[in-house]
Each structure stands twice: as C-alpha cells, then as structure tokens.
Image 1 (cartoon, helix red, strand yellow):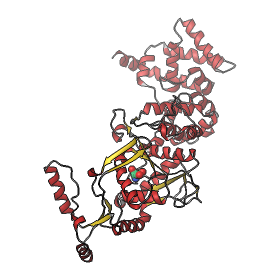
Image 2 (cartoon, rainbow, N blue to C red; image 1 turned 30 degrees about the vertical axis):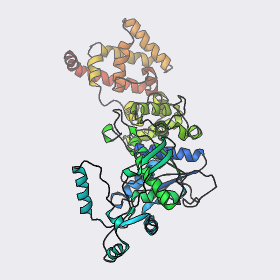
Image 3 (cartoon, helix red, strand yellow; image 1 turned 90 degrees about the vertical axis):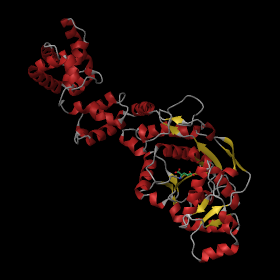
Image 4 (cartoon, rainbow, N blue to C red; image 1 turned 135 degrees about the vertical axis):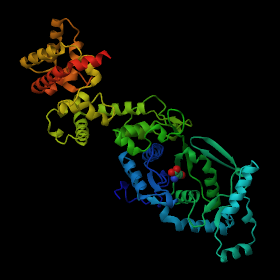
Length: 502
Ligand code: GLU
C-alpha cells in the first residue's frame, strides 16, 4: 500500500523524549474517512505538529468482520489527500490480538477481571426481563460468584467464556481538556467485556492497551467516546497505568442540527475531492468546525494553523457543517492561487471533461485569469469555460426566449460582426467601444446588445465580462459564432417568439 510516512524511523511503541507529545488518529475501518473523522485527524495532527511531537495512525480493526482493506485504503487516501502525514508505521489492532489476550488473562490472575461463562441465551433473557421491569440492564455478576473449582471445571470442559472487568464501586472522575471535570457513578457501568469468547479483544481493551504501549500522551477524539472514557479510566487503574489527557471534540451537525449524515449530502472526504474542493480549503474549513482561534480570522495557512491551534480553543458546542461556507472558502483558496497554478487545475478538469487537447490552446492562461475569481468548485470549470475551446453546441432556451425574440437581433449581430472585423487593435477596451457606440446609435441600452451577443458566443446567459471573452476568443471565432447564430435565428426566430409568448 502506498503510505505516506513522515518519519519512518520513529517506532510507535518506543517513547521519544521525556516531554514528547504523542497523539494518534484511530479510525475503525468500517467505512470511508468521513468528515468527522477527518476533523479529529486534523486536530491531532495540528496538536502534534505544534508541539513537535508524533502523530500516529492506528487502524482499529477489532471488528474483523466489518473491517475491510478497501476501507483502510480509503482512510489512507483521505488522509494523504488532506496532506496529513503520520509518523512511523501504521499500527493495526489485528496484529496485536495476542498482546491483548495476555493482558486480559493477567487481570484475571490479579482478580481484577473474571471469566464469565454465561450463555448468550441467559444474557438475552436477563435483558428482556430488565426491559419488562423498566430498569436498565446490568450484568448480574453470576460468574463473579463461581468458586475456583467450578471455574476450573468449566474451563477443562471447554466451556466458552468472555473476560469481564470487575468494575469497582464508587465514582470514576477525570478531567477532560474540553469538557472539564467529568464524573461517572460506577454503579451505572456494567462489568464490561474485555475479551470475547473467540479470544478477540473489545474496543475498550485494545484502545487502552495500545494507547499505553504507544505512549500516547493526549487522546483527542470524538465526543461520542466521552461515555466510554470512564471504562477506559477504570482499565488504566486496573493495569496500574497513568491515563493520558483526554480531549473530546464536539459532534459535527448538519444544517438541521441533527448529527451529520448521508442525508445531508456528501460525508466522505473522497466525495469532497470529487466535488471539486481543494484539500487546503477542506483542511482550513474542518479546522474551524469546533475550534476557534479566539478571534474572527477564517483563512489560515497550515503554518498559521499549527501556530494558533490549541486544545483550549475547542468548543463544547456542536459545530454545524455549512457547505456554502466551504464553497466560499474554496473560492477564496482558488482565487489566491497564481494564474499558472490555477491553469494547471483548470486544464486537468477540462481534459477529464472530454477536451484532451485543451492544454495546447494558447488562451488557457487568459481563460484561467478571467474565471479564477468566479470559480468556487473545480467541477464548475467545464461548464464555465467550454465555450472558449469549442463553439456552443446549443443555446440556453430561456435565454433565447428572453434575448432573441426580437427580429432585430439578426441585424444587430451583423453590425457587431462588421465593426469588430474593422478593429485594428482587438482588445477589450476597443471591443467595448464598438458595443457602446452601436447602442448609442440605435438608441438602446448597451445591455440590450450585450445579452443577446453573450448567448450567441457562449450559449449561456451568464459569463465573465463579455468584452474580455471576445478578446480571448479572437476575431475569427467571434465572426464565425455570430454567423452561426444568425443562421440559427433565420430558422428558429418564429419558434423562439412563439415560446416567448407562453
Ligand atoms: N476507533 C474509534 C472510532 O473510530 C476511535 C477510538 C478512539 O479514538 O479512542 O470511533
């Protein structure tokens, strides 16, 4: 797999300097890299880079059946597209199943965890009874009461078991860097499972063991894990390990204030790439979802973000994903590019849209300069520029009904054509003069000439400035297109007028 490793010599399991900041992004590969995950990855990356620490990538594939290589690849691709490089090798839970098992057994030996032989049927029946009695289900600890002999007998008989943590009484408290002091009553917690009957770890066991073995100092993750954190703290306690700092990042909501989901449109990073967004714009935009620099700056370079980022700027309040803002921001990034950089992207999009030779055209950089301030997404480019590279194949129908219903249009086109042909210097200023003087002579507003001509030359009703377009198209092309429009109108004017009546 093509993986971007910033620092291949760094081992995720070997601690660096004493105060080294070490964070990780730990996606479960049960789906593509989604917006929320990407934002969590960005926060971790910024934090690591700010503190000159390490940013690790860990694939949490404890759920073997639901994890796929395709998803892992999509996560790598998404992170690389966003420009997030990680340090050292990627860690996979699935390569460490033996480690978790040994540690779970160790907790059993120390009587901090116990084997539970209860059948799925018994647990289900208990659960149903709890529902009937309208109480929260909690495992009844039946197996905690088994004698040593009984446990040994069941084990020798090959009876399957899980390992559960013996959750102590009292409270579990921790200080979250975003939520502040958080306290949970342990009574509300089950003796949760650490190791399943097939010997595979649960997420809780794997995440704590790996965070410890990777010397993670700060766990920055989605606040859907806030309620898992007391379990993790209890596990740290059981192992006798000091927990890392936790920072739970608020959810991302759709415009309707519901959790962002497919219903709201694209949620995977790949879809944003396809939709014509720039990685830098998406990066900048996601950083501002749930984090604020404390002032109202919105456009940041990566270096500025690294400098400004801090856990104290993360808000508890859920962030709302507003795609229009992303579009605006993308437009800002596109416009800030040099014409040459923008032209490269423009040519690529046009080639993909079926114009393979477009790069050879001399007008590319002029077109790029003209449309750069108007584009918000790269996908808009073919629609906005194709007329520079081939004559319109059709004319906007509503535009025709609006601007071409008057029979005079033909004569206007002929006059424009003649006057443009006579220009010695074919530039926007002289072209504008042709339009304005003709309008004056005809006693009509210039717009009355400009709109019909735009439709004839571009097939569209909106475009950047017409005079600049005419300059770029050149005399011959303009003359040919006006001629074509005249020929079209000679046949279609009655139909256009009829359509305009309706
Ligand atoms: N694998 C978890 C997830 O994808 C993240 C767990 C964590 O960051 O601790 O939600």
